[in-house]
Length: 236
Image 1 (cartoon, rainbow, N blue to C red):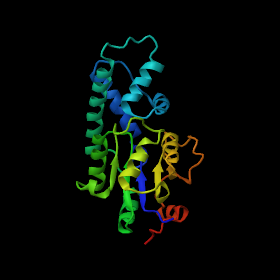
Image 2: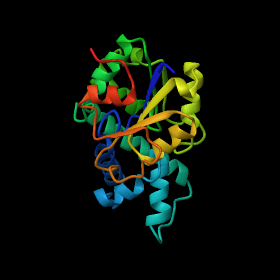
Image 3: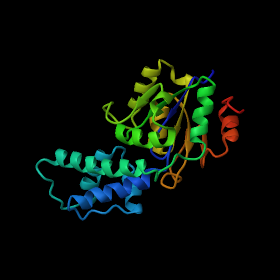
């Protein structure tokens, strides 16, 4: 069947964002008088959970034994995440986190071939906008026929909810699309929605179990190789 859309995850897939997230969490903690510090090894474990607010809650429940939660814990977490997002989007706007190799060319090639593009991510709309405005320009939204991000669905990856939402917006069947992901959670999410999925690994996910992926790549610097292996007819 002809591929009519490519659906992209964001963090780790469009850009190597995870260390930027980690540093931004630490800045938010320090700004709020907390002595929490997420080093690389710890953050690697915390990435088991998708969603920033969910990740803070997971850290508190599973790694902070003896910590007494404030009465307004949910509001406390939302505030921390809001501060973290401000630090992270500032990094993006300063151009500190570029798009990964081949990503913009893939998008341009797909658009030229009449293939729709979409986003399926758990990251916030602010993060997506800040990253893609730098990487694709002020009119970045015009690239995408569907932009699924943040809390628009009740269950985050590895649940397939965000992919079902995107498929509905695209008005396409799963077999008419392919997905690009970087993690086990993302792969499980896309596969559960019935979408053929390719993986581009990064330093935080290269060790993940990618059983079921249609193909695994270090990155998309060799787009012709990706096009051959995925069956996309986009080579110039």
